[in-house]
Image 1 (cartoon, one colour):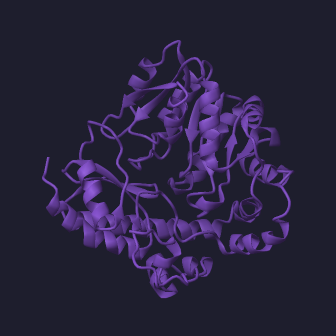
Image 2: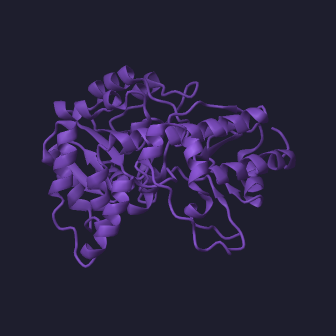
Length: 375
């Protein structure tokens, strides 16, 4: 089946505003246009990705439209956005580097920092950049989660002279669990003097009291902690590829020595006007919370266990082989993500999506459950 654009599944503004459920959300969002390709023969629910499908803030949409006049030109000077981010974090410009989404920064830095050694990470976690490093001969040593949480005791024990970098995603992906803040700070203080600790904060705006849950104060202190963030998730700009890191100046120089291109004009200008847009962020948080709650209700209808999440996804135990469930759901036009972990044999990750896509999940899930034999 052919995948159609996400906006084709958004439906009318009334449905979306009902989902948002607050006056602030109503004023923050303008309903995206309906796709002109309504004659497409089929559609899929793209729940294998982790996005904010409502898309950019109104100010960002305007900036994207206005960026057409800048399209012939490279973004040669990133100073303005770097200074804006630095000011928000009480850092200097030389502690901020931009990247094409956070994935580019994570992939390039992992390969460069861990060259000749290994990476240490919990499991399951986000692995795209770690798989990229593996294709270049860099091994990641994984420490299993304990009751869905980071096992800091075992993480400390697993550090060896070969460990070149430690990686965490907070909230963790795919579990959606927030890492214990004080335990994470303590780990970083202990370990960063020996090797850098990378904190992937792709979803950090969804953390409770997120402005105090970031690890950027450790960067301010001068520890070798690298905080990676993106405009792809909560800011709804996954297709525009803008991210950044907060780190020591030498790590910023290291990243820029590895990159091969500048930012794209629409993404850069949309990020400038989106950063710190608190009204939009509150509305996006409301929307994504409602998405997760709808996934919870679908799971509860079928008596499936799940983890309460603060990400743009929910981790669900189907009590059936995860790969078989992925394939069964795919036959019903619903795509989900599976993480390879023998201790989570029946767990699948379901991404937040439009109401129409989540309705497709509700319709497809009982069919897939019936088709797949239980563990």
